Image 1 (spheres, rainbow, N blue to C red):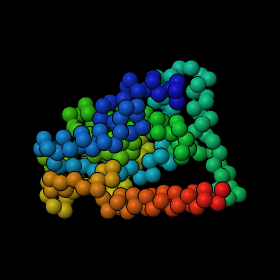
Image 2 (image 1 turned 90 degrees about the vertical axis):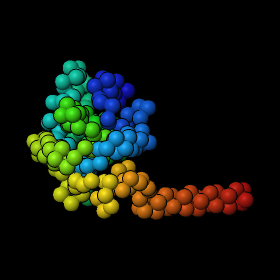
Image 3 (image 1 turned 60 degrees about the horizontal axis):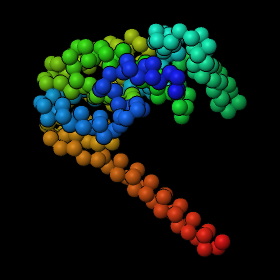
Image 4 (image 1 turned 180 degrees about the vertical axis):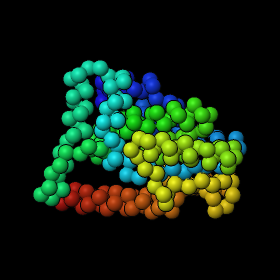
Length: 222
């Protein structure tokens, strides 16, 4: 990753925030807020179905090869992608997806979506993306419908699928037409933390508290 990241980092667009140096969730949320306040309230909230598990290896490598010519490095990336998957007694070599939890996977995922970033941006649309989670904010419904059509055509042509039940278009300035992004709900001019996010945070705090109590109890016995 240390070798590959600088090559592609200079190509990535500012609207991409996930797993990039010096950029994070807060920056992405701030940009979304800014676009909404500027009147871009018609939002395409897109969800890529099983994105990290379905990235086509051949097309991903075509993009990587546009920037990397070193044969040895390319072979290392291919070997990384083709790690055997084991499920019970079955083994197979995947032709799509990136190994979950691996340090290189988020970078490769960003590389594969970079052409989509460029396509939407070149069309004059305002998109904010964090890894496979992205929204496109538009000034009217017609423009938003065009954006959704553009994204759907690109995903279908590049081996990906928009989740039919989790992808929607609406005017987030109206009640009941909001959207969720990076743990927050945007609706009717407000932004708040989702209930699921609060529950997850409470569970993490509770687990940390239990761990601390256990450590204190062990220390008393020592």
